[in-house]
Amino acid sequence: MEFALSEEQAELAATVRSLLEKRADSAAVRAASTSASGHDVALWATLCEQIGVAALAVPEEYDGVGATFFETAVVLEELGRSLAPSPLLATTIATHALLAGGTEEAKRHLLPRIAAGEVATLVTGAAPVLDGDRASIVLAVLGDELVEVHDAPATWVESMDQSVRLAQLDLAVATTSPLGDGTAAGARAELVGAASVAALAVGLADRALQMTVAYSKERVQFGRAIGSFQALKHRMADVFARTELARSASWAASYALAEGADDADFLTRAAASYAIETAQLAASECVQLHGGIAITWEHDAHLVFKRAHALGQLFGAPHRHRAAVAL
Image 1: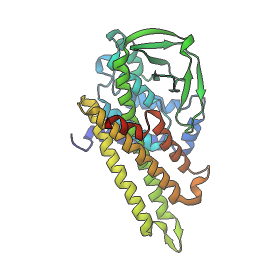
Image 2 (image 1 turned 120 degrees about the vertical axis):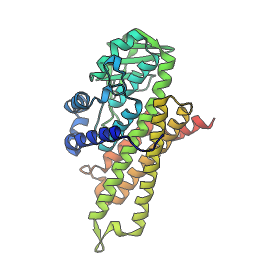
Image 3 (image 1 turned 30 degrees about the vertical axis):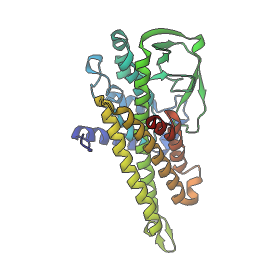
């Protein structure tokens, strides 16, 4: 692979970033995170209708764009940079689970709805479910079967990062309809989830770094901008180097998943491990180098810090990904 975006991929990233800069500033992110829906419904509609983010991984025969997971990862990196709460993570995982394990009938029934922007999610165990209380399409892996869940009572679960929406679903009183192979769906969902988190983490690390660099140019101590101090330069340079390495790892994992490469599992877990720890380092340095202002509610540093540590809880902590490939 080439470690650079194609012209079309670069244009996709630029378009998403431009939209998010206009519609997902600090005030908008905070308002969306605490809203009843947990995200900006109008922004999600724009992302789906004008850019087609939910349709990227859906094949053309199911009314999708027919792109690959790599293009979705490009969008996720931009969402990670903006901190905007979005159902794309949950919807992407559900989409790939359905593509991997769903029957032809199930795909024809559900994928066009997902491509059109309906929020979808996947239940894989007893843990809280991403967007479980706002998804109109709920899939579940029950044993070796992939099913669609109907009328499951959902209870919102409070999370450290308010922009990550979680809910507990009561499957005991729900009805289900079979969709296909749960084993294949679950295996694909696990890898797509980890690779998606890696992409989000890369965007977040880049956001934290840019915030820190910008502040270091503005903040003056002892008559000099603090960015001129050698010790701070070294710390920001370390974060920059780690972020670029994390981006390369994330792109390699996304490409491997898109191409079905034999080493996709290894590359995905390596990317998730490295990118999550990089995001946590970048968030820590962001707080440290901003000084006292970073611990105020009004500053966005705490949003970056919360997201960095929340990402490590969604599809495996870094040490668990390393353990999985070390066996």
